[in-house]
Structures are given as structure tokens and as C-alpha cells.
Image (cartoon, rainbow, N blue to C red):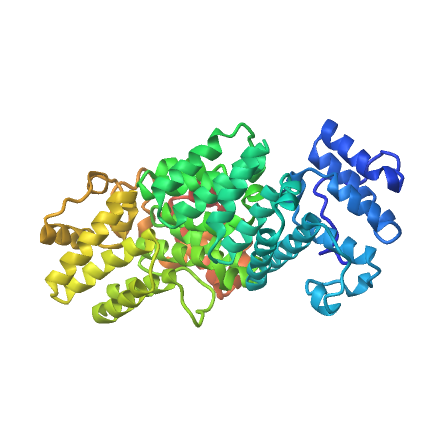
Amino acid sequence: MSDEQRPESEASSSRDDPIVEPENLRAAIESTARTEGWEAAADVFQQHWDLYATRAPEALLEGLKGLPGEVFVARPSMLVAADYLHQVAAGQDPRRFHDGARDLYRGVRQPRELIDSLIALTGRAAGARTAGTLDKARQRAVEARRMLERAEETARVGARGALPHLMFQWGRCLEVADAEGAIVEYEQSHELGTLTEQGEIARRAAASLAWLLAERGRLGDARTWLARAQATDRDSPRYDAPLHLTAALIAADELEDDLAAQELARVDDESVGEYWGARLWVRAMIARGPLAPFIVSHAIAGESERHVAGLVREGANRRYLVRAATALAVELGEDASLPADIDEPSAADMLRRSLALHRSGAHAAARTQLRTALAVGLTPRDEAAAQLQLAAAERALDNEDAAKTAFCRAHALIGHEDLLRTYLALGRAEVKALCALTGLPLPERVATSTRSMRGIPREVGRGPDLSALTRRERELLVLIADDRSFAEIAEALFISPNTVKTLTRSLYRKLGVHSRAEAAALARRT
């Protein structure tokens, strides 16, 4: 069995416990779960994998049934392992195991219980999701849901303890693949997790749903689900990334950047997991001043290189990166690096392009792009942005009636969901002119915000004037803050080491520092 199918063990699997006989393995796992928790129980299972995977797969399958549901949420590879064991137990060649096993073996499989089939399908879905084959992940999740709906009620009741964990995985697959149905899966996972007194999965489902709703711009509903997640008495710091990201996104939309930064700081590299793109987007939204946007742009390029192509070129993570690039364009007037364009652009892609067209003076082309986007149906977040941009484009084209209609719609959507940051995409003069045209007031929090509309904040704070740096000097400062050597900086910027030294001297002079350490400290502090 390859490393992809082997169940992962995040803790050490070299335990001092004696080897358990096959017939006693499930009881030993259940006892460990009760006394030491699910992680220790998973380690017991892992300890016996090499011993029994081929010699006694049935014993390992029984052992799997004794694991708490949290294991399958925290370690999706356990689901793949379950399907592998089923095939070995059925006498199939383990060397030929792969995600399309049913097609390979022409559908010949041993009869299995509903929960076994659901675990197998969910394992395939989770495996496809982490591998970046998002369409396959979506198909498997949908197939598992249909199987559950066809099942007899008695069978469904028998699987009730594991179902909230499986539904959560289906929701994750659908969300990452940018497919419909994730909201329903999260809702049912939370409901069933609450009903079966499984607080951790109920909390995770509520937090994931809160994020999904906030990302779409439904902040009212997002607040409700965020409160449900926070009210759960099972604190899960390791899996609370969507909870803190939701709080950060809501704060950013309401122009509460300091609060957003506080919540964002609680999402570290260990806990962010598949929400890495979401974190970059929120970071880009609140990137203030002449240096911070370049740091985020640098991070976007680095993270895009680290992850599987399918997770960058399509699905939710691509949308997050496009939103991040748009946020940086609002601050800097130019985009961050992004993956190559795709054949069927998303709404986020079209809004990014229309903003660039409007800023370049191609108002008619921007209007066409925006009308195309609005025709396909948008989330509240995207519709608010599209209507606001359309209002600006129509006004620039002297179509005052059309500008009024679009701005009234944008104003209503923004006000209803508190999507105040949407206004920052336009210049202050443009927004004031649209308010004067329609007689609608600019929300007080926007009018009094210390954040300017487009560009550097009005209140930069104390310290050197970073706006005096050239673009190349800012890029150099970002790389210095990232502890890159001069050779690495030269390679990253495609310049010679001597040019790096010349740039560095100019940078130090403008910043009033005398060493790399001082420059790096200043960059991080700023």
C-alpha cells in the first residue's frame, strides 16, 4: 500500500503497548478511546497496521469501527484506509488499489453495510479533494449523499453516530470544489452532531458554514452560525481556522481592521489547513500602507507554488486568490501574481477584470463585463461589487439614469449585509459623486474611516516614509524581511548580486538603518 493510502499518524506510532491479538483489537481501541482520547486510539490502530493489513484485514476493519468519529474528520486518510481494507478482505490484489476500484474490478465487491459503503465513498472524496482533483471529489460526495438517501431508515439510524462526520467531509468536498450543496451538508452535520452530543463536529460544521456564508456576503446568517459555533463547549484550537477567519472577514467588511487582524493572528500555519487561500484573501483585505500589500503579494506567489495545481487553478481557493488580487489592486493599483487565466472565468475573475478596465478608462468594456457577470446570478458580495462598479462605469459614460439604478441597488445590498469595504474599490470622489447623484448618504463608518478610498491610508503612523521607496526597493525589503540571502534575492528579482547591493544601500539610506537586521525588524514592525 502506498503512503497515500496508509492512514496518517500525526503523533508517534511507536508506542510501548504490547501487541493486541486480532480478535481483541476493537475492544482495545475502544478502551483506549475512552481512557486516553481519540488520538491515542488512532495510534493503537496505526501500530497494528503493518502487522494485520494483509494477514488479518478483517480485524483492522473491526478496529476501525471502534474509532471515535473525530478520527475520520481529523485524518481523512483513515477513510481511504477503510476502503483499502475492504478490498484486501475481499481477496482483491492490494497492489492494484486506486480511487477507481469499482470500475477496475467491474463492480464486483463484497456486500457491505451502509456505513462501510459511505466510509469508502467519503474516503475517496477526501482523497480526491486533497489531491486537487476537485471534480472527482464533488462526484464522490454527491454519490455518497444519494446512497444515504436511498437507504432504509433503519440502516440510516444505525449509522447515525458516524454520519455527522461523513456529512462534514461531503460539505468540505463540495465547498472546495465550488459546487452546490455544501450548505445543506454542514447544516445537517451540525444538527446531527448536536443530536448525538458530538460537540466537536457540531462546532466544526457550524464554523465552516459561517465562513461559507460570510464569504458569499451573507453576513447576517454568518453571524448566527458563528455564534452557534462559539457557543459549543468543545474548544478545538487545532480546527478553529474557519471560526476565526469568519470573525476576521466580518470585521474586515465592517472596516474594523484592528479586530480583523487580531482574529487573523489566531490562525497559525498548523491550523489553517485547506483554508490557506481564505487566509491570504483576508490578509489582502486589511493590508495597509505601502509595504504590507507587497508582503501579501509575495505570500500569494509562494503559496500558489506550494499547493497542488488543481487547488490553485479552480475551486474555492482560486476564487480566494482572485479576491486577494482584487483587494491588493484596490490598495496598490495593480494585481498580485495569479495562476494563468481559465477558460470559464468565475464571477470573481470577471469583477477583477472589470475593475482593471474601469481604472484604465475602458468604461464601456467594463460595463459589458459587469453585465455579463450580473446575468449569471451572483452572491450578495459579488452583486454588491458589480452594481457599484456598474454605477461608476455608467456615470463615466454619462448614463445618469442607469448609474442611479445600479448605485441604489449596490447601496441597498451593502447596507443590508454591512459590506462596507465594497465602497473602497472606487475613489472617494467617485463615491461622493454617486451619492450626490442619487441623494443617498455614504455610511458614517465609511465617511469617517481612517482608511482612504484607494491607496495609502490617510494616517500611516510614525516611522520612516515607506511611500518614498520604489517598487523594486519595496520588493527587496519584503525579501529581506523573509530572511533571504543576497544570492536568493538576486535570483528572485532576476538581477545581479551587485545590483542587489546597490539597491540595498539605497534602501538603507531611505529607511535610516545600517544593517539587514534593522531593515528586517523595521519591515516586520511596519
